[in-house]
Length: 245
Image: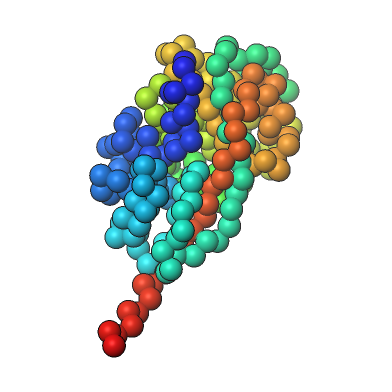
C-alpha cells in the first residue's frame, strides 16, 4: 500500500465518514460526525482549518466529543477537556507470534463473533475497562469478537474506524479479573488475520504511556507510524453577542 493512502490516517475520521462509513455520518460537505449514539467522534476537511466551525450546529450543548489529529483555534464556547497523545500503529505483514486460542486459557475457551444480541454486555465491559470511547451503537461499525467464561463476556476486540482498505482495531480490553491469559493477544491476532486475508490493512491507536500495549502490538508485527492526538472536547453555550454601538 502506498504512502499516499496511509496519509489518510492523519485525518482518519474524516476519510471514514466520507468513504467506507459514510452511512454512519451526519454533517456538511466540510465537517462531519458519527451519528449520535454510534460514536462520539467528529472531523473536518483539513483544507481550510476554519471548516471545524461547521461542526457546531451538529453538536448538542454540553456534549463531549473527540477530534483526532489537527486542532485549530476552537470556537470560544468550546472547551478543551484534555489531550490524549496516542501512538498510531499499522500492520502490513502477516501476524507474527500468532497465539493459540487455548494457550494459557481454560479448556473450552474460544473466540466467538459478537452480535447485536450481545450489545449490552459489550458496552458494559468496554465501559468498565475503557470508559468514554464506546457507545451502545458502536458495535455496528464493524466486526466484534469476544471470549466468554461461565457465560460472562470477559474479553473483547473489534473494528471501529474503517477507511477504504484500512480498518482500525479497537476496544481491545479484558475484564481485570481475567487478565494474564492472553485474551487480548488472541482477539487482536484474530481480527488482524481476517482483515489481512481480505487485503485490508489493520491500524490502531494506543496511548503513548501504555507501554505494555505498545509492546504487545509490536510483538504481533505492528509498526509505529506516528504520534497523533485525540482531543477530548465539550460544546458549551454560545457567548452572548455584544450589542452594536
